[in-house]
Image 1 (cartoon, helix red, strand yellow):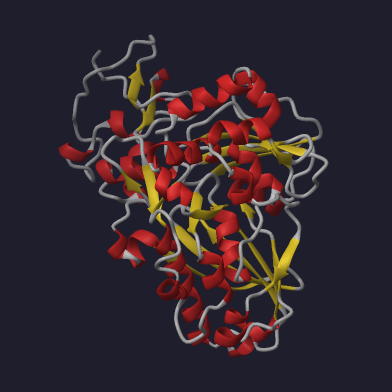
Image 2 (cartoon, one colour):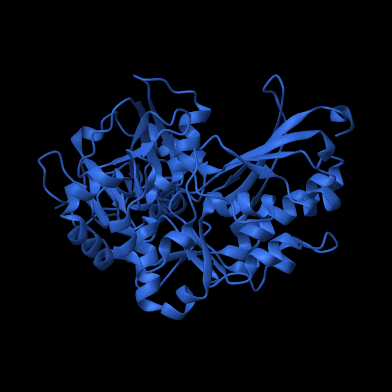
Length: 430
């Protein structure tokens, strides 16, 4: 790191489903430092798989909030040990997995403003959360709350026109409604509700950071046309909700200067600015510098397709969010829950956890797979709403059984079913 001493920069943070990552970018937009902490690998004590806990019902999916805090501690300590020059950081911002929510217990704001630089963050924030495991975007346990919300505002299309989306189980308003209904005591003891993005920003601010317009669009609570909370939606979810959310702000807002904790412990300059964090999908649109007419596809923990819009046209499928770059415009998004984790699971099951073995098997199958198709939804999908693994022959017959045989010499009989690797093989029997 000595080569980078005195190099003025900005830090970008990513609090995603599976890891926390940081990059340092100089004035010429060159990345000269990056590091990450992978939850499953580096924080085994939390017992996550894919960064989450999937509950027995198969619908409830949560992540430990202190795991995110501890991951930040680890990265900052690694940066400090490497000799990273924090004094040259002019500003920082970041992204968080969309739709996750964090519930700060009463008294947390006082703890945030009086952090001791002698201790790590996770050591001081142990008692600052009303619930220890937070609902994340993979959760689909709030169907009842979704139907209640839609009924309150006049139906699914009415809610979509108001907030940019019909009611979705992972959206924060419905998660809040579930918490209020099932654990009213925890809700009553909550002083502030953050998204993962504003939660991460709060750690750097030393106070509760506001939710930005773009990430706030994924809550079924924000009126996307005038960028204020919908009173009807708030009332349908829980009492006193507006004061627990705070006022939303434009996504490019400077929300304050960095907390004195980071100045004293790591040497950040007191004037270092904290820019509002946003959701990972809006951040992708900003980072890829999309313009109107561009379409991007992101293959991540979830797979997404998104584009820049001038005028919102909400429907019953997909989402319209406030644009993170230009608050006068919008972005459209389709999200598919069974993304990289599903692909990795098939790879692990059928190709000995090796992408090269998977590729060899794929190359041995003719392009198009003779018209046979497979769809893999190990968790409840968003679009369409379906779960399970479904394989269809070219004649549109669903295959219920598979025949096993070696694809090539490099695969064993037990790991070589083409049905599981390349969607559906012609030899499958219905």
